[in-house]
Structure formats: C-alpha cells, structure tokens
Image (cartoon, rainbow, N blue to C red; front, side, top):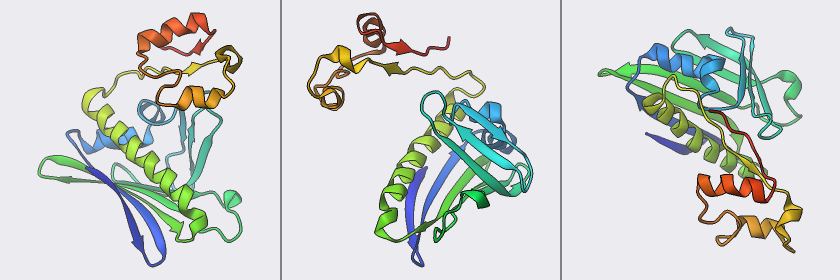
Length: 205
C-alpha cells in the first residue's frame, strides 16, 4: 500500500496502490456511491454515473471548496476516470486525469489510482505536492474506512475559536506553534474549551 510520485516525459503523476479485503462491488460503491464517498472523503458528493456525467466533491461547511469534474470513463465495478470540465480549464493548462482501476488477485481486491497531467514547471510544484499529500491521506482514509468502519456513519469534529478571545499579539502563532493553543489537548479538553472560548463545534452522534 503506497502513494508515490512519478516523473515521465516532462509530466508528473501521482500513483496510489492499495489492497482490500472486500469485494470489487463494495470498493466500487465506495468510489461512486455519494452516500459511501461521504463516509471517507468529502462531506457531500454528487455522481452522475455515466460517461459525460459530472462527479462533485464538496467540503462545505468545513471549508468553501468544491471539486467538480467531467466523467470520461465509466466501466461498472471496474474503472472510472474524470477530468476538468471544459469550462473550468484555463488557457495553457494541461488537463489532468484522475483514474481509479479495480482488479482482483489471489482473493484480494486491488485499487490503482493515477492522477496525471501535472506539468513539470516550477509553478506547478505547490499544487503537485499538495495534491500528493492529499491523496496520501485520503487513500489511507478509504482503506481504513473499508477495513474498520465499512457501513458506519462518520463522526466529524472541528473547532472554531474566536481569535479575539485568545488575547495574543500573534493568534496564528498561538494556534500553530508546538506549544500553541491546542498542544496536548484531547477531544475532552477541546469540549471543555467550547464553553470557555465560545467555540463552535459540529458533532454528530
């Protein structure tokens, strides 16, 4: 199980390979059923299950970000690929392709994800590295969900603190330093902070 970087022909790709003890049908559902996607990936999903349809990943209200793509491959229980919608492509940008392929071998269900189309120029470095980090986390999240919590409702925890209440000259440093505001805090500690700092929590039972 790994997520790696590939440099080839002046293009960069991200390759993710994972093995699962579930059926291909179950893994396909995790990748294409909006209700399943929301249990390991984004907070809201929309999938038009056909070539030419759209696939949307939405993280609202945790943060304001939507990822909407155009489905170019739909092979039931085997392969899906998507790329930016024509209206979202900027001039001189290489359109990426994100592809998931499901296979079986020796009783195991295998997933290969290839996110390709990143240019080699330095102006692409930050985007490439950030997406690599994202898939490293998210594919592990998929594996963990399918292995330990398949079918379970996901619980979400996040905290929002009124920066004025920190009474710090540098609130960002107070939050992010190793000795910062959340250093050493458990979930129980954060719940207690809710009352003291008027923290907004979103909890689902």
